[in-house]
Length: 633
View 1 (cartoon, one colour):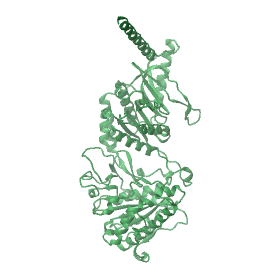
View 2 (view 1 turned 45 degrees about the vertical axis):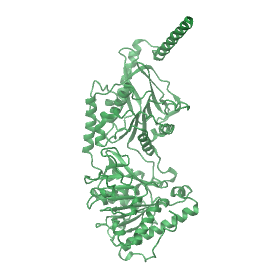
View 3 (view 1 turned 90 degrees about the vertical axis):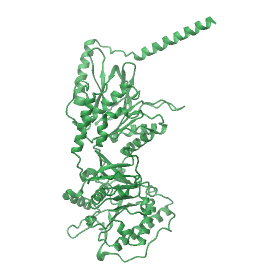
View 4 (view 1 turned 30 degrees about the vertical axis):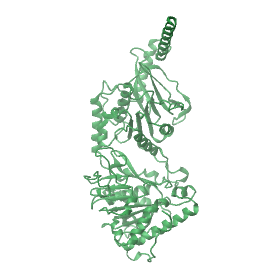
């Protein structure tokens, strides 16, 4: 028995020696085969290169110096993550390519204090360098979000939302990133004048710690985003990658196009970023991988709290001072109009939340919008912004408009020919603006007939969705029917109620969408089909009764809700609801006139003006149309 105990003790001693030797080998970093003078000379040259690649905020030691003014580079490409120390007094800034190039990963997550400090340091450097609003940051932190707490002033100002902390939040952030990289209309389907869209903003997704419930699906989505992200202006910083294997599945590969930071006991190592090819502009090589920097690197510590407060406070103040929004802020680049496809839906920017553009969509899930607001709240301004946003993104072969205006000022008339201005919006098919319910009913019948025709086409093609019909090669535009002060139409006749109800129920199937606006929300089964709710000042009635988010809205702001007006706990972050600032398009009539003229001049020469329902132009009355029995809802 003594011999067994002695053998066991010797075995434990041998195992301890092996473990110690393995740790020593792991921590050992061989020095370059140069003498000390050469190392100091190399470090000096690297310091000079760092100043050129990453000036000011991007490379200065934050713990000893305030780098100065904010917002000096449109897209900071290189950023410091720490310092290389090949020999005593021979240190230099460790600079990596990031924005415009690739991604950054750490082998440990933010539970390691070194990683937490480096993440905060990199984020502060990038925020301080990029002009406010050009860097869109989304954060995930499964350790309760505390890592990003020092940046809370940015959340309060609407510049950077609080970090999400669970799998649901991760999925929402990934969905937003996927929408960011989603390509527009294929090049071969664009008009000759249309060109690829140019992004003026960059999205940075920082994952400080993945939720414990993260599945292989989310990990695969992250990998897919890494592949396509840099070309679309999306970059990832992920701590804890590759993650531990899930069950029997093999370990994840290193993130594509990423600089990889491997943490050791007393230092870290850099490696993994692909070389650039000799092409111009330089592009990452898909085959060559950098083997790593063979010297120890110390990650930057947490930046001083007063410096973080100074930067976040100044950025928030700048945002408040530049809160004015212009119509052109909501539109695509003028050189890149008519570049989108409506096959899978329509989308347009309706306002800004902080500096982040907020878009609303017409899809199968959100087919119709309901807009409410008191007189003078800006409903007409909001509608005009939406119409110009849609008509600059989609050409007349992708989008048709039916416009019905029962408001006092009849502002939608500007999109049809007049004696003073013969131009019209080339997307407009029919319009009515004389406050006559009979004319409104006539146009509604026309929309119902077109819907019935489309349902027949769908049935003949053997498909059940508009997107499937388009995928089969059919050339068919989506329809948006705008009805301002719709309650006058509902009150005019039971037929109008029946037609609107049928269009609301069946429209999404055939690519027909409604935007209904009113000063007063009216209880009606019809509005149950309207999941997108827009509440302007005095328009809280379009939201659920317990949702008071629109109670104190100032002019120029709106609450956009994509869950049928559903609210939530007071003070909680609501992913389905945002408060946006939107412009008054009439603030500069020359701009709107120029927009309308350019769209009109770009029309097909043989295109006809819209049919206008007003006065003597009322079409011959037709029998009432009912489509309730045509297709099973």
